[in-house]
Length: 75
Image 1 (cartoon, rainbow, N blue to C red):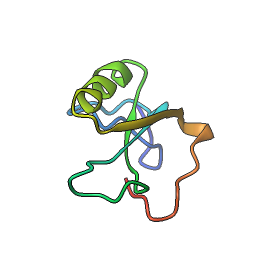
Image 2 (cartoon, rainbow, N blue to C red):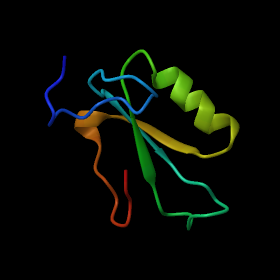
Image 3 (cartoon, rainbow, N blue to C red):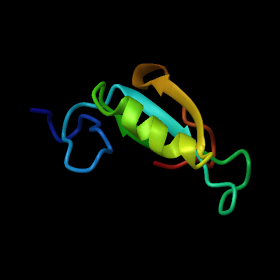
């Protein structure tokens, strides 16, 4: 169980603590430098990465404690 201030996984229905940040953008909607983020637990990192990757959206995967959010980015 996670507390309400602990970042949680973005996978549908998952409430596990986030460990990874998946930085992405949709080139049809966002400027090249813009990064949106999904959070992932260990279990869902690969699935979410593949989902974004096959669409050409995934830009980076970083451990949550190492993530520095670029200016103009959003979750």
